[in-house]
Amino acid sequence: MTSESAPYVALYGDYYPKDLHDLLKESQEVYANKPERPDYPEKTVPEGWPTQLPPSPMIWDAETFPKDGSHMVDITPEELSEINAALKTVEELSIPHSLINKSSFPLPTLGPRLDAACHSVHFGLGLCFVNGIPSSQYTADQNVYILLGISSYFGETRGRQRDDGARLIHIFHAHSHGLPPNLSPIFNNHAQVFHNDMTTDILCMYCISSASNGGSNSYASVYKIYNYLAENEPEVLHTLAAPDWPFDTFGYEPAFHTRPLLFYTPPDDGEEEGEGGGFDSDGEDGDRTPRASELNHPPPPPPPPPPPAEETVIPKIGRILASLSPRQLSGSKVHPRPTTIPPLTPPQTHALTLLEQLCKRFCITHTLPSGSFVFLNNLSVLHNRSMYSENPDKEIKDHRHLIRVFLRNEELAWETPRELWLDWGRVFGEFEGVEERWVAEKVRDYKDQQRGMVNYTAGGEGGEDAY
Image (cartoon, rainbow, N blue to C red; front, side, top):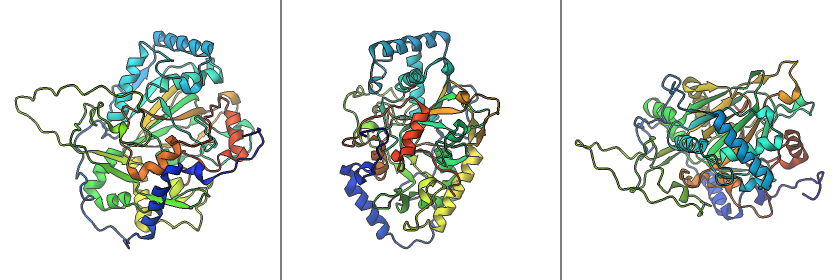
């Protein structure tokens, strides 16, 4: 950008890293050569997939989700003092946003608790809430520093969320701030259907201020839904796992690409189930994806413990991953689906509808209070948002406002399926000439979007009224 008013010209290379063009062509060929399959009559799971996932912390619903608060990290006064000390250092040394990490934002007491929560997000429940930041007492810049400092304990790699290189996205109701109405789910107060954000390993949202009414999020376990479908409607798993779902590219050429919504990653011979129900955290999942970091190699795994008196063989089941945004599949008010893109088939429409129903059936619901975070395994948990509103006497500055970042922990990251490299590359790939942007002011972020910088987003929440 040469000036604040200069128009943004969307280029093909802005949407996909150039080194993934061959994969994009393969995606087009998949759809062009797809077999005729009006239905999936199979009554078994896809070949090689587990018929049932064994008991794991990743499998939960509203009844079985822990009630002991083990998914909560409540910051103590002493830990808040650590945060303030780290914040002061960042400000005094003028540390760039991109260099705020666990080393530059040390939290001696809170840090180990966040590390444990990070492990649970990757290999346990898949979500964690961190509470207790007096967000109203900090400036916009300070809240961003705190966000980056705390979130670095869950992942130090931050993905871009817009073609202009934005690493932070502000979520608020623009019209309530006197700004022109905006149908983007980021800038309106509408409800959203269940979705994954497109596409990141860990989703982080920091609530600066909560809404007077509504604005809660519900969360549903992909593993729980998989077990239900495997037992009751396995043909839907075939639909979800098929590589012919046409994803809108929002005006770029080609107009769509194809991939599955559900993925199964089988275990490698050397991998073992970890304590949290996933692979051992010393595995090399993070190294089997493009652009995996080479800076922090995990230590070699410890020797295996001696077998128990009566040895029990734990099956190696691999991982189930989901990545879907109904906004890209069937359109929304913001981006009506172009007629040039193939429509969804009846089995695909049924699968999306059933997923929404199962999410509502099995989900838990939580409203982020002001000064709290949610860290979400974006591959194993789907989420939605309820509509929200503000009391008329509430000051505009205190209206609902969240900041979102996309995170990746290079040591603990799950293996990214090859079919996801296109979408994953839009967030974590290398783009020449695109600088990182760290906008702390929400209105400025909105104006960036209004200038046309985000006509085509690198990643984002699912749209309202998606299907």
